[in-house]
Image (cartoon, rainbow, N blue to C red; front, side, top):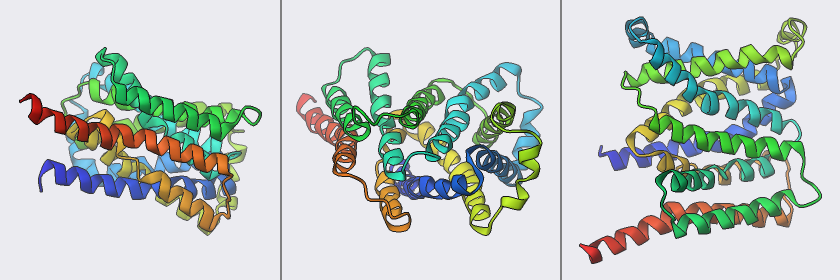
Length: 303
């Protein structure tokens, strides 16, 4: 399988996982609360990755220097810690449709930051950012903006910054070990700050009593599939292609999320949300499809 074929396959898998991720998280958050649900998912992710990759993890971890651990910690903060936590908090008060539309502004932010870092004005990125900004405005509205909207936008911003950091911070070690430690550091940060938002140990001890079958299934899905596996694919795509490519690989996910929200949660997004969602999706398509097609067409002409 060529690198391009592998990338396309991984994009399809990642899109399906992330498309189901927000609706499944909504179930878990509704049943358990944002922090207990996130803590459980983070713990399951670490256990799963260690069970799968324990040999390379044990073999290499003792030989890694402090600077490398610091780099992995820095990468983990936005991607593995902030994004899932902010998503879960926002889902307590925000619909899946709004959450989905706003979290997938991430590719637009990534293109914008990449344009700044490369110090090169790109008309396609500017057009994409314009469409994205209008879409955000339509979704949140002037009078309906809430802290939950700000939280989910902060998650998208963290995601885009994290993807660029992951690409630029070079960590030349076994990829499996790299993903394990990033997820482990993300879990550590979640546990570290959770006492600020939870009544330890009262709420933690009450956790088993509130664990229904659907909540347990949501934890397992988001811990293993939507946590460990999808992060492995995400970081691998960044390594295989680029941060911008990986970020736009999420294009198909919001469609799946919105369909599930309408089907299983009975959500009926207003016209402004649908139009805003379409503009955000169009902004992503501009950079992911239109720009590459334009560049490939111009390249033979300049050759």
